[in-house]
Amino acid sequence: MNDKLDLLLGKLKLLEDELLVEIHAKEKQFSYTVRDGKVHFTKSVARAHRLLAKKLFRYWRDAKWSSYITTPAIISCIIPVALMDFWASAYQFICFPAYCIPKVRRRDYIILDRQKLRYLNSMERLNCAYCSYVNGAIAYVQEIAGRTEQHWCPIKHAVRVKTMHSRYAHFLDYGDAEAYRKRIEEVRRDFDDLKRNDSKDVPADDYADNK
Image (cartoon, rainbow, N blue to C red; front, top):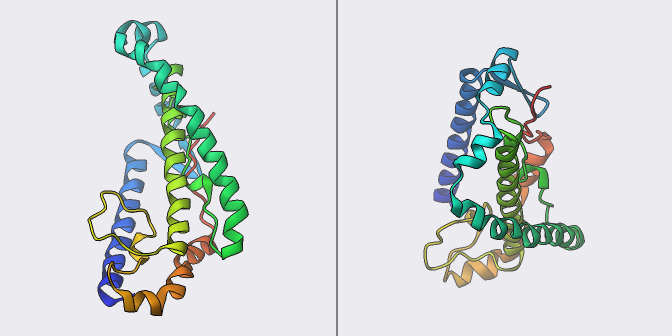
């Protein structure tokens, strides 16, 4: 990996650290703490949240007719997403050990926490759970696909990619034939950063509502 790329990755790590600092600042601002992967609000804040929940009757009454019409189409997406989630999990379980590719931890991507917020009514919590699962599953599968791509074709595109997965920075430059032949096996095995992160054994923030 060249020096410039190392520098960019270092800057990215600094930005991630700054983001964590900001997240912890929000914990203080909104009176909650995260312990053992679970969020705990103070009792007074939890009580205030319940008072802010919108009654279901008002929620249904204020909903637009377009919401009633499009809901079946939205809900139907759960079928292909769930199948994709299951199939990708089975795929990496079978294939990744054969190529020494670290498995993607599903819990790092599918985080069901927002539906536990008590200022949301039951329908809003259901909506949040749905969105959390679908978007988390897509991100989970993208990471599996990215690690697969790193093994089979770790070459950057000539055209700028709108959304890059986490492994893209490790890929070889487009058109650099010499580097491809010299470093392809090295890049295919370049998962050391993932192994270092896994060795820390830091659980994902899987928030849950305090009872």
